[in-house]
Amino acid sequence: MTARLLQLETAPDLVDQVYRALLDAISEGSLAPGQRITQEELAERLAVSRQPVMQALRLLKRDGFVHDAPLAGAPNGRSRGLQVAPLDAAWIAQVYEVRGALDVLAARLAAGRRTRIDPALIQRGREAVERGEIKAMIDADLAFHRALYQGSANPLIEQSALLHWHHIRRAMGEALRHHTLRGPVWDEHEAIAAAVAKGDVERAEALMLDHSGQASAYLGAQMDTRPSGATPHNSVVR
Image (tube, rainbow, N blue to C red; front, side, top):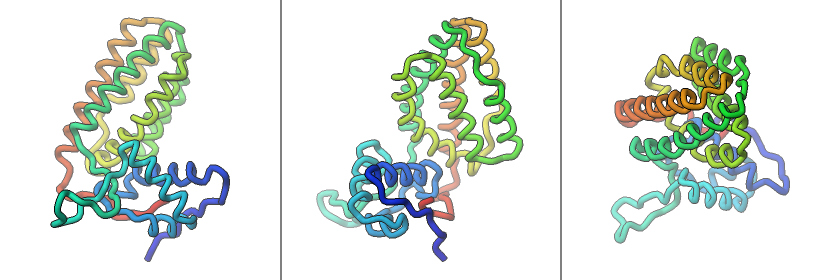
């Protein structure tokens, strides 16, 4: 039985709505890595015409979230349709290299401004871990880092980092479905926030560099040990 989907209202920014709906589904794993997708099916499930779906898929392909689907046995590597981009540990490590550099810059600038990050963000993250809610854990992690980006007073940092976050969100969701969250994450966040609030630029930078490196290594290791062929069972666009 097909799950009921959220229908989107027709609007001038319908392509953006479709893009975001599909990106959320890919990021959360309800459109699974490697899953074949078609304009017709997605349009039907989102209750929109094929045109905005086609345009949204072009944007997703440009951003690396969908690829051409290989046609088995076809000559010259021809493809038919599209598929959700597979998750690759080496690619995620490269994403973390870029995001880590942005995070360190944000920590330095925010510390220079003695930015105070709301302790409620850290508490929200700890509570999400206690409940074991994957989406809440990922959302809390993103909320903390966005607070740091905004505290840097350089809007280009947040704008540059958010696209990378969608790739990381995919990897985090997939890893957390089969493993536990790395234990010290929220202790590290709390220490970074304290250094930033004190204006300790060097410590904030060092803590963030270590945090990013640890997160990348842990996530890469978890992805390498995923159960073979593991994919979500409820592959629906929400």
